[in-house]
Length: 147
Ligand code: ATP
Ligand code: GLN
View 1: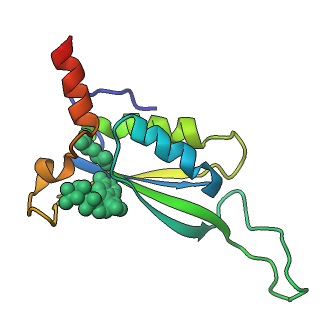
View 2: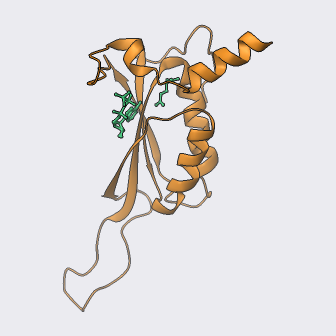
View 3: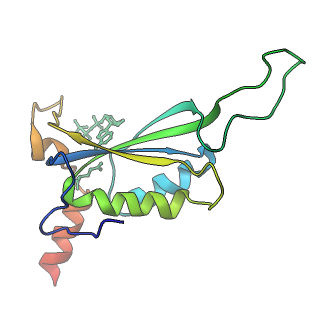
């Protein structure tokens, strides 16, 4: 695992100010993960119902005796979370903590550089667009200013 290096920023390649953390997880774990993320101030999350196949293989359920009855794909949820680079490790750690059962099929996380963020309502770009009021950065800066 990469260490959390909030001050310097992690050395992911290709380097970017923002990253998309894309996690493919078990559908029934989504509430645990999303509440865990919200508790740490991650307010912007997109989820999609997807189907996939990995080491877990396909579903063994059979339907109606059809020749093609075995479904190769299992229902999963894709979570996409765009964050600034300093927040990537904390988000990955939280997803692992909340999504992991230890059994085959827990899922995978992909890290994708994001070149820009645009807030449609205001036309803001970059850091202004990525930051959310009451988000993780706001919380951390208020902790720092108290101490
Ligand atoms: P506004 O202040 O204009 O409401 P916002 O930053 O709060 O802007 P929304 O318009 O609420 O953003 O976001 C619309 C949708 O975009 C959300 O429902 C979510 O699916 C997605 N989204 C927003 N921010 C992120 C993010 N950082 N990562 C992933 N998805 C996001
Ligand atoms: N980085 C944003 C902030 O701290 C939060 C991003 C997100 O919620 N996905 O405001």
